[in-house]
Length: 202
Image 1 (cartoon, rainbow, N blue to C red):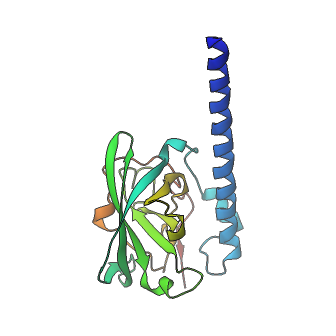
Image 2 (image 1 turned 90 degrees about the vertical axis):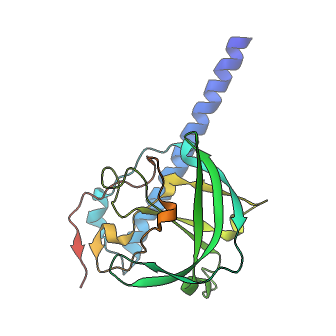
């Protein structure tokens, strides 16, 4: 009986791993298609072969406790081209990853918050110990939806971490991840280094 239970558990875990991998694969296909659809995209169809990702790993999907912030002042988040964009701190998030307690900050774009389509968009830029080795040196981003905050918790999936356009081309106003989101661990999930030639936007 114990053997049967163990086998059923292993089958169940394997099925979950496969279905999760399929889910991330679909997410990444949609991500690639967006480059082709976007007229302002730095990448064309032939460039997509130079995009690389870590294998899907559900251990990098976490449930984070959310602490909403109030009366936050707008600040200028620097961008890689020397300009800046207006943001405000929306919330602190706390979770455990690889046995470490992690605290990060979610941001909200002032410009996007005035657009009905993006009014619930939350921005999670971060750097980690894979930067300049396996991932883009300028860090990576995760997009989140304020409507997905339930009972003061939100799901953070680092498998969906992606590179800013500046990883592929100059001439874009990509926000520089603030130091408070510099993680002292290696996030081996999401998008890796782009291996194509860096482009120059006219």
